[in-house]
Length: 253
Image 1 (cartoon, rainbow, N blue to C red):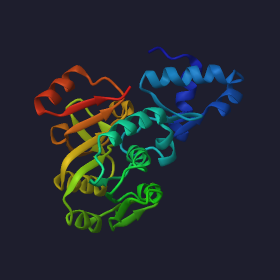
Image 2 (image 1 turned 120 degrees about the vertical axis):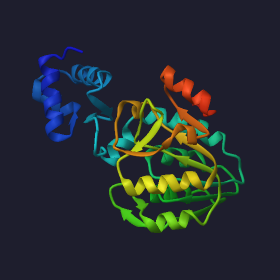
Image 3 (image 1 turned 30 degrees about the vertical axis):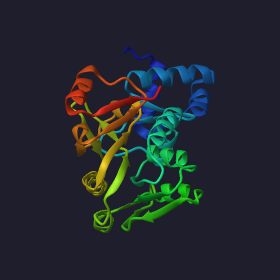
Image 4 (image 1 turned 180 degrees about the vertical axis):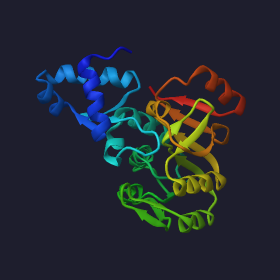
């Protein structure tokens, strides 16, 4: 992609500040908000930025973007993914749900499910499911990570090892073309690996932004996952690998 002078300047601002907003850029460059939205969409399509509500954020590499920005990223796609994933969870199930905005979206779709036990290291998931009186909630212990209300560390791992779950619903920060699930926090990676060990059926919820991002720490392979819920077409080579691994791809478009 050949960037315009304005788009190059926008990218430079994002590199310095981590994020940009439509209104501020429109005022700065004295153009319409529609023009800035078009610039940001083109920069997103080129893999330079990630679009969020009201602006865009710098694409991450070794550190994650802010939790509120992640919550806004691909919001409608996450809802579609969550609806399909929740529909496949039988009532009367035991479930583990880990840290992430996608798992929070699934929790909102489980509010009418009956007779559930949900174990989580995500305080946001626990607070969402309080509204379901037919859901028993178990919060894994651990060190509270204030940035996203997640519980991590050895205490969380030891709690998870006390259970054998019917279903695990997990998210990740990135998916690479080798089929590896990636994340940023090594403590969170250890928790996710333990969840996978302790579940009979494992579902990954991952919107299309996961293919455009990178992260340094490996959680597992898609070969370890039973079902992937996503809103995008899988790359052909990765789809073939999933077929060989008997990993089901559910496209939620």
